Length: 339
Image 1 (cartoon, rainbow, N blue to C red):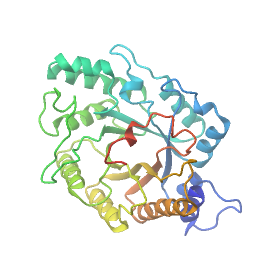
Image 2 (image 1 turned 45 degrees about the vertical axis):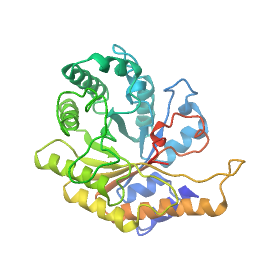
Image 3 (image 1 turned 30 degrees about the vertical axis):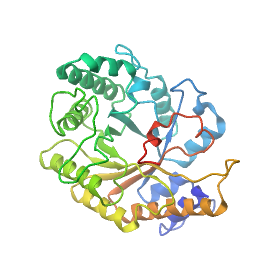
Image 4 (image 1 turned 60 degrees about the horizontal axis):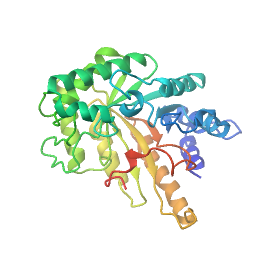
């Protein structure tokens, strides 16, 4: 139902299409919109989904972009201080290249999924040592994927859920203030962008967060930060709206459009980066037909707003099958503000 709703909307107004229904990727390309999905390889020792025929075929034929759910996060890619595990990320990149998909990198700096060795290191490390650790990680990862990853979520979910919107209130993290890297305010975020840009000047660099899809104090805090960055020449190119949603109606079409327009007026792109619409299930794990239809309409509604605003240049779903949702690593969905 979701794929059909997307294709029908993308096909509207683009002229003659082949008699056979186009794939999501084909329809999106005709509207200059990247259609992506988050995907997994073998990050945590589960079976490699890219080797499953149905999974690989759906990913390869329906999308023009993919992103690793976990393959490029700290706990997967940097499991010990002296060890990098590029294998799962490399497999995703190779798959993308074989099927002509673009790759988003996710992510370089986050308060969550920080490996235990970093937590231990941070308890006694001076801020200068934390700065070197973060710079070395960003340099190693971006260097490894230089020319293969077209866009990075450089910093993920740094703004506090309690932000007032009068400035930019940040959440506690080992990178900000526990102990941090020795730079006040949004300085650690700015520095992460500068380090990433120095390694790969061609990559698009994004700040990514949830709960900023509609107007509100958290969006205003993010807007204040990126406006400041743009005014001072910090190398930031876009903002990612995660869009983990329910059927509540949030965000409104007008509110989402307003936020996209405010960001793009600064010269930034907007990507919808992690969209999903969660449903209540019965005891057998099934949703009602009415909820499934409402879910499809929510996807259609958000896609419509994106298509109506040229600065919205990508829409990506957080996965594309419910087959693995009960078993996979889903810490990004476990924040109380996301549920």
